[in-house]
Structures are given as C-alpha cells and as structure tokens.
Image: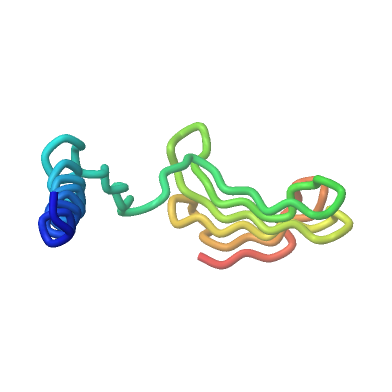
Length: 104
C-alpha cells in the first residue's frame, strides 16, 4: 500500500468511527427521561420545630378537615391560632386553653 492510500484509509476509518459513534447514540439509546416538575408540595401538615424538637408553628388540617395555622410561644404558655373555619378566626390562648383574645 502506498503512503497516500494509507492516509486516506486512516482518515476514512477515523471519520467513520466518529460518525458511527454519534449516530449510534441517537438510534440505540433512548432519550434521557426528563424530571417532572411538580405544581406544588402536597402534605396534610407542616411543622416548624425549634432546636429542642418542640413544635413552635404548624400549618395543617385538623380531624374535621379544617385548615389552621398555629403559633406557639417559646415557653409554650401562649398559642395563637388562625383558622377561617372557626367562629373566632384569630385566637390567643393560654396553656390551659382559656381564650385571652379573639377576633371574628
């Protein structure tokens, strides 16, 4: 084989390998799956915990399916609740459950 023929043969083999490799990924391997983008986060309750693991705030549904937001003081003496399903929409209660303040 002459030198010129050897160069043409090497160039053809190189181009064939590159072209074959590129086309084989298109035909032999399926497209990568695209992650689905959620439209939101689904949960029945979200809790905010302090460093000791005590629930300081919560957003969720009660046993009757009513929504509410609950905030607790650091010492746990007072609780502020917000629930559009309750007669008193906003309530501030002490540890014993006595309503200190409420708003319709």
